[in-house]
Image (tube, rainbow, N blue to C red):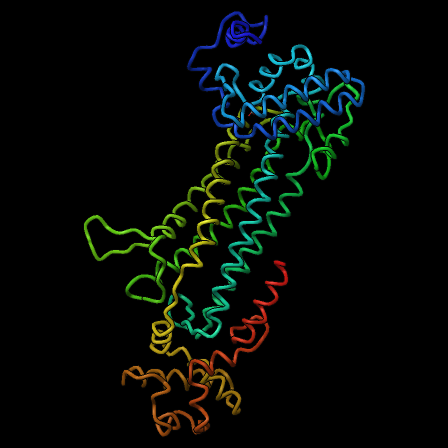
Length: 465
Ligand code: ARG
């Protein structure tokens, strides 16, 4: 298409239109400046479509060869940054098709046979998203590996475990890290599940009703490595549920990152002093020279709101749309793209940052000692000696109250004092009252004993391969 033809086209779609679009309407309706990032998916989809059109005898072998030649040229232009994206051509699809026609003439005009931008855009988004899901899967593996290393180095380190943010029971720091490995492994699983539904082919649905050309949709799906073909043309062009469920899975992954972030921020504060985060992930203050702020986890916590917002945006976008395609769907792209960008950057930076966490075992242990974290162990000890659990619970509450009044730990109460609360107490009680004794005692599948932690690390490593 020459530039003068392009100008005419930009003014009116076809002979049907009697006046051009205003500049504002053109800008308002165009998507090329954000959807051009799907150019490779668009070209891959077009090449698969053209190959099938030729195999079915809908276009000639010569036309097919011309389309391949033109597309190869377009790929090199886009990669070199010399491709001229035009707002007047509205979106990535029309920009590429117009350039193809400029390069190879009528063959370019035949590419769109049996196709509509409606099934084309749905295909592009799916292809693009499939590639991104695979990249995100790899980043989730990197993050899990980084957490596993940190867990392994700290399997024996005692952290006060909290409920209600009150010291509850001692846990292994490694065990705590493994909790996040579980979360991120489920995120990866969820994305794989979403991928199966993303990876289906809309092409052949055409505008909404299918097409009268003898297309071989299964062949196109195979060429594009898709798991199947969308079975209803109306559904194929109109639903964006796959993008919504991807964003839901991404939101959950971000929520997991956000919970970890919150803990890192707390732990790095002076009040906790449990960890230090490498300087390269922190910033200083322009006014308070002593400050080192954990900006990366704080920002990740903030960006979680942004991704959850995209989920709300996308799901609301779908609500109330009649079948089949509506222009509303053009609004699926920016939230989806930003979700992918935000999640990828966050996972990448977290995998690195986790490697830069310095654990301070003495501070953690001191905090665990301050909170009567072994009170449950004392109750369990009395139960083993025959006291019913509810009674043991009460006995220990009295012991803790008295220790609190004296400002000492349970393990610092003399034997005679402990025996005053229950004659069942013997001098073997001190082993039970130690943090390490408490930790080692929880040697049950999924428990915090260091042996269990090491077994879990081995299981995860085998799983990740
Ligand atoms: N840019 C459009 C989108 O993102 C492409 C499909 C346009 N189809 C149409 N009938 N106007 O949804």
